[in-house]
Image 1 (tube, rainbow, N blue to C red):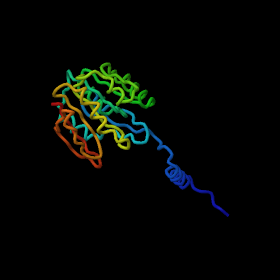
Image 2: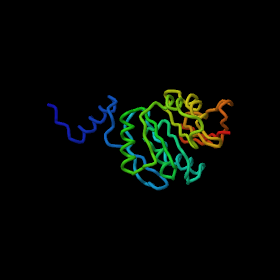
Image 3: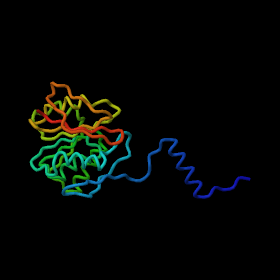
Image 4: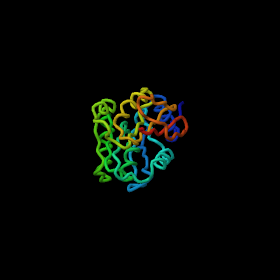
Length: 207
Protein backbone atom coordinates (compact mmCIF):
# COMPACT_ATOMS: atom_id res chain seq x y z
CA UNK A 1 0.00 0.00 0.00
CA UNK A 2 1.45 3.40 -0.99
CA UNK A 3 1.64 5.97 1.76
CA UNK A 4 0.55 9.55 0.96
CA UNK A 5 3.55 11.85 0.53
CA UNK A 6 4.14 14.54 3.11
CA UNK A 7 3.62 18.12 1.92
CA UNK A 8 7.38 18.74 2.25
CA UNK A 9 8.25 15.75 0.08
CA UNK A 10 5.58 16.69 -2.45
CA UNK A 11 6.96 20.23 -2.73
CA UNK A 12 10.49 18.90 -3.19
CA UNK A 13 9.37 16.54 -5.97
CA UNK A 14 7.38 19.34 -7.61
CA UNK A 15 10.42 21.64 -7.54
CA UNK A 16 12.62 18.93 -9.07
CA UNK A 17 10.03 18.33 -11.78
CA UNK A 18 9.80 22.03 -12.64
CA UNK A 19 13.60 22.31 -12.78
CA UNK A 20 13.90 19.28 -15.05
CA UNK A 21 11.17 20.61 -17.32
CA UNK A 22 12.79 24.02 -17.54
CA UNK A 23 9.77 25.70 -15.91
CA UNK A 24 10.15 29.38 -14.98
CA UNK A 25 11.46 30.12 -11.51
CA UNK A 26 8.87 31.52 -9.14
CA UNK A 27 9.24 34.91 -7.53
CA UNK A 28 10.47 38.18 -8.96
CA UNK A 29 14.17 38.99 -9.08
CA UNK A 30 15.46 42.49 -8.51
CA UNK A 31 18.55 44.60 -8.97
CA UNK A 32 19.37 47.71 -6.95
CA UNK A 33 20.60 51.06 -8.20
CA UNK A 34 23.82 51.59 -6.25
CA UNK A 35 24.48 55.32 -6.51
CA UNK A 36 23.05 58.77 -7.09
CA UNK A 37 19.52 60.12 -6.78
CA UNK A 38 17.79 56.72 -6.68
CA UNK A 39 20.39 54.85 -4.64
CA UNK A 40 18.96 51.58 -3.23
CA UNK A 41 15.87 51.78 -5.47
CA UNK A 42 14.95 48.42 -6.97
CA UNK A 43 14.42 47.46 -10.60
CA UNK A 44 12.59 44.23 -11.47
CA UNK A 45 14.46 41.58 -13.43
CA UNK A 46 12.29 39.37 -15.64
CA UNK A 47 13.01 35.66 -15.75
CA UNK A 48 14.06 35.50 -19.39
CA UNK A 49 16.80 33.41 -21.05
CA UNK A 50 20.08 35.29 -21.35
CA UNK A 51 19.01 38.26 -19.23
CA UNK A 52 21.83 38.94 -16.73
CA UNK A 53 21.95 42.39 -15.17
CA UNK A 54 25.39 43.91 -14.70
CA UNK A 55 26.43 43.07 -11.11
CA UNK A 56 26.67 45.77 -8.44
CA UNK A 57 30.46 45.50 -8.20
CA UNK A 58 30.92 45.95 -11.93
CA UNK A 59 28.60 48.97 -12.06
CA UNK A 60 30.43 50.49 -9.12
CA UNK A 61 33.75 50.02 -10.92
CA UNK A 62 32.40 51.48 -14.17
CA UNK A 63 31.10 54.66 -12.53
CA UNK A 64 34.29 55.04 -10.54
CA UNK A 65 36.08 55.08 -13.90
CA UNK A 66 33.64 57.57 -15.39
CA UNK A 67 33.19 59.77 -12.34
CA UNK A 68 30.15 59.88 -10.10
CA UNK A 69 28.56 63.01 -11.62
CA UNK A 70 27.38 62.67 -15.22
CA UNK A 71 25.72 66.09 -15.40
CA UNK A 72 25.46 67.20 -19.03
CA UNK A 73 26.08 63.72 -20.44
CA UNK A 74 23.83 62.15 -23.06
CA UNK A 75 23.74 58.39 -22.59
CA UNK A 76 22.53 55.48 -24.72
CA UNK A 77 21.87 52.07 -23.12
CA UNK A 78 21.57 50.10 -26.34
CA UNK A 79 20.65 46.62 -25.04
CA UNK A 80 18.82 47.77 -21.93
CA UNK A 81 17.42 44.49 -20.52
CA UNK A 82 16.76 45.20 -16.84
CA UNK A 83 17.84 48.83 -17.33
CA UNK A 84 20.46 48.57 -14.56
CA UNK A 85 23.13 50.45 -16.52
CA UNK A 86 20.88 53.13 -18.00
CA UNK A 87 19.04 53.87 -14.74
CA UNK A 88 22.38 54.00 -12.94
CA UNK A 89 23.56 56.70 -15.37
CA UNK A 90 20.30 58.63 -14.99
CA UNK A 91 20.53 58.37 -11.20
CA UNK A 92 23.97 59.98 -11.37
CA UNK A 93 22.73 63.09 -13.16
CA UNK A 94 22.98 62.34 -16.88
CA UNK A 95 21.00 64.99 -18.74
CA UNK A 96 19.47 62.55 -21.23
CA UNK A 97 19.32 58.75 -21.12
CA UNK A 98 17.80 56.58 -23.85
CA UNK A 99 17.11 52.90 -23.20
CA UNK A 100 16.65 50.65 -26.24
CA UNK A 101 15.01 47.25 -25.73
CA UNK A 102 13.48 45.17 -28.51
CA UNK A 103 11.56 42.80 -26.19
CA UNK A 104 8.16 44.47 -25.74
CA UNK A 105 7.56 43.00 -22.28
CA UNK A 106 10.92 44.26 -21.01
CA UNK A 107 10.33 47.67 -22.60
CA UNK A 108 7.00 47.95 -20.75
CA UNK A 109 8.74 47.06 -17.48
CA UNK A 110 11.39 49.73 -18.10
CA UNK A 111 8.67 52.31 -18.81
CA UNK A 112 6.93 51.36 -15.56
CA UNK A 113 10.18 51.88 -13.62
CA UNK A 114 10.65 55.25 -15.33
CA UNK A 115 7.19 56.37 -14.18
CA UNK A 116 7.66 55.03 -10.66
CA UNK A 117 10.97 56.87 -10.21
CA UNK A 118 9.72 60.00 -12.02
CA UNK A 119 12.75 59.77 -14.31
CA UNK A 120 11.69 62.52 -16.71
CA UNK A 121 15.13 62.74 -18.36
CA UNK A 122 15.05 59.03 -19.25
CA UNK A 123 13.30 57.63 -22.33
CA UNK A 124 12.48 54.03 -23.27
CA UNK A 125 12.11 52.90 -26.88
CA UNK A 126 11.11 49.42 -28.02
CA UNK A 127 13.59 49.02 -30.86
CA UNK A 128 16.38 46.83 -32.24
CA UNK A 129 19.66 48.33 -31.04
CA UNK A 130 21.74 47.79 -34.19
CA UNK A 131 18.99 49.09 -36.47
CA UNK A 132 18.42 52.16 -34.30
CA UNK A 133 22.11 53.02 -34.07
CA UNK A 134 22.44 52.61 -37.83
CA UNK A 135 19.83 55.35 -38.33
CA UNK A 136 21.08 57.73 -35.64
CA UNK A 137 22.90 60.99 -36.36
CA UNK A 138 26.65 60.95 -35.60
CA UNK A 139 28.35 62.49 -32.54
CA UNK A 140 25.16 62.19 -30.48
CA UNK A 141 26.29 60.74 -27.12
CA UNK A 142 28.96 61.13 -24.46
CA UNK A 143 28.47 57.54 -23.27
CA UNK A 144 27.11 54.38 -24.93
CA UNK A 145 26.49 51.26 -22.84
CA UNK A 146 26.66 47.91 -24.65
CA UNK A 147 25.69 44.65 -22.95
CA UNK A 148 24.40 42.54 -25.86
CA UNK A 149 23.13 38.96 -25.49
CA UNK A 150 26.25 36.80 -25.28
CA UNK A 151 24.85 33.98 -27.44
CA UNK A 152 24.30 36.23 -30.47
CA UNK A 153 27.90 37.37 -31.14
CA UNK A 154 26.91 41.03 -31.49
CA UNK A 155 29.99 42.50 -29.84
CA UNK A 156 31.88 43.78 -32.89
CA UNK A 157 28.72 44.79 -34.81
CA UNK A 158 27.59 46.74 -31.75
CA UNK A 159 30.97 48.51 -31.46
CA UNK A 160 30.90 49.35 -35.17
CA UNK A 161 27.40 50.81 -34.85
CA UNK A 162 28.19 52.74 -31.65
CA UNK A 163 31.54 54.33 -32.56
CA UNK A 164 30.18 56.99 -34.98
CA UNK A 165 27.56 58.08 -32.42
CA UNK A 166 30.17 59.16 -29.84
CA UNK A 167 31.42 62.70 -29.49
CA UNK A 168 35.23 63.08 -29.45
CA UNK A 169 36.40 61.97 -26.02
CA UNK A 170 33.18 60.02 -25.45
CA UNK A 171 33.12 56.52 -24.02
CA UNK A 172 31.67 53.17 -25.00
CA UNK A 173 31.29 50.43 -22.38
CA UNK A 174 31.15 46.78 -23.47
CA UNK A 175 30.50 43.50 -21.69
CA UNK A 176 31.56 40.27 -23.42
CA UNK A 177 33.00 36.82 -22.62
CA UNK A 178 36.44 38.06 -23.76
CA UNK A 179 38.17 41.39 -24.27
CA UNK A 180 37.29 42.75 -27.70
CA UNK A 181 39.93 44.56 -29.74
CA UNK A 182 38.21 47.40 -31.57
CA UNK A 183 39.30 47.72 -35.23
CA UNK A 184 41.59 50.72 -35.72
CA UNK A 185 39.23 52.43 -38.16
CA UNK A 186 36.63 52.89 -35.41
CA UNK A 187 38.86 55.39 -33.62
CA UNK A 188 38.39 53.75 -30.22
CA UNK A 189 41.24 53.34 -27.76
CA UNK A 190 41.25 50.93 -24.83
CA UNK A 191 40.79 52.92 -21.63
CA UNK A 192 40.00 50.54 -18.75
CA UNK A 193 39.08 46.87 -18.37
CA UNK A 194 38.18 44.36 -15.70
CA UNK A 195 36.86 40.85 -15.14
CA UNK A 196 34.00 39.50 -13.02
CA UNK A 197 33.50 35.74 -13.18
CA UNK A 198 33.07 34.76 -16.81
CA UNK A 199 32.46 38.36 -17.95
CA UNK A 200 35.06 40.77 -19.29
CA UNK A 201 34.07 44.43 -19.14
CA UNK A 202 35.88 47.26 -20.83
CA UNK A 203 35.69 50.97 -21.42
CA UNK A 204 36.88 52.43 -24.72
CA UNK A 205 37.36 56.10 -25.57
CA UNK A 206 36.68 57.87 -28.85
CA UNK A 207 39.88 59.52 -30.02
